[in-house]
Length: 632
Image (cartoon, rainbow, N blue to C red; front, side, top):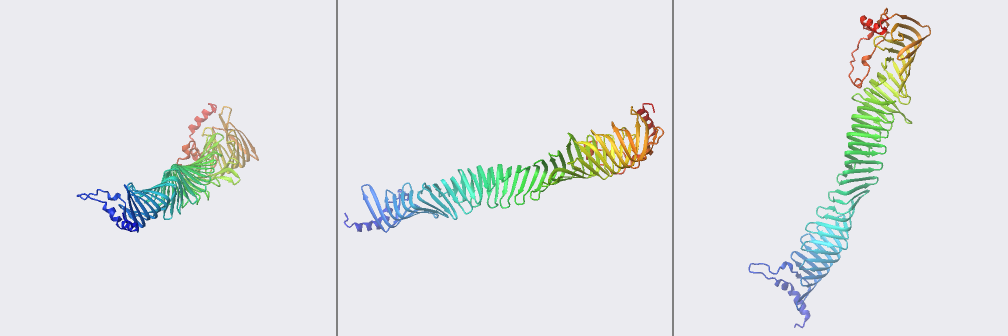
């Protein structure tokens, strides 16, 4: 027995590394039979004590202790080694490889299992990442670090905290659970379970997750966030919110470099009173532009827009559609293949197969292009012979022209005024008309026809320099003809009653001509008929003013005023060609009778007026015989 224990302590301290190494033996083939990599080796300590009692071997080390096991190095102030287990205190450092370092206040290491429990101010450093915790379990075989009492992981300016965590050093993957939070200069993330790749810096959401970035918030229950690239994908109940903006979709994808949010599948985007749905919605955050793609639907107050694609520029308050589009704005409906609209200026332009409907006025306009103003209810239709349809007293009114303009009468009056320009044609069951231009006021149901207007009603044709027609309950009430007024009436298109004057007013009842007031240079040619509708003579009269009364679309009687001059001529002794007044032209070829007539090309080549045509005398005699029943 050595009596000087102090000398023994220093002796053992000096010999300890060699004693441990001396335990390693090899076979003749050089094989390691003692598994030296599983033994904890003492490389250095200032002081050491070795005690062996029965089967127990205990080593006490103190001062600048250096230990290793395979490629793992451990440093501390003091250590106790027993049965390949280490309990260490003070300035604990564990190193494994070139990148992993763990610092702690104390260590409990099971050498055979290669598992370390570290306590105190524990810091694990792996490349640029640092993990701070109070207790850490590290398996050196699997290179997995675990904690269950809370930890903070830092990576540059980014910081992650959670109550539990699993850090796979070899695969650069960490799993965090319970009160997980990432704080970054660009965003803040909160979740219950998160997978984080420390190499690629990709966070994968495995539980309900909320990400806050300035005023923007994103919620999901699955997805990922590439913190380096600024790209994220959110799935499973994904939601986005920024101030009054809200969005939901099957998938929400955010690209931080482009500042773009993409919503795919059942996409819904809400911005205040504006709401949008589509197969996919892309939001350009930097430019505040939203793209709706596939079954696009946009609502803004009373305005409802549907199209294949809708682009909305919130800064300029302008939207553009591509593909068949339908815009509903209160009582107005617009359909087109494409629409450009400036909400701030209120002006829009529609292209391709345009259909505009005003449900209040029962007006429908079809064309190839339309300019419109939402604020003033202005619409100008051009291209492809704009075609207007209106329902007047359960009767359909059709009109075509080169240009149609519809607008509100005034700011306080929503009734419409309609303008038509160039080659205007009108078709109604009891009315047809042509002119160069037209104005219609829905407030008083008055049509004004300009430049060579002609109106047909039943067997009568009306023309003048200017014609005004008023409807009452959808039926013709009166027609006012100004300057060079001329009315032709015929039941057989062979003999023509003619009325001419400076101004003529025709009065109707139930769409039938009842009376007529002719003023200024009044002239008339009137074919008288008996009760059997047989012609009995022709009356030609000139005076300054006259009144004519009609029944069954024929003249019943005429009242001549102010020195009339007239004569009754027998049918068979009269040259009927000479009775046709200057300017006579029965325009039956130009009269629209079908919808096709509103669109067909009209031969503009001048035709000779019928006053210059000769009447076949034999046809005249045959007709007279037929009309008089052989009495003529």
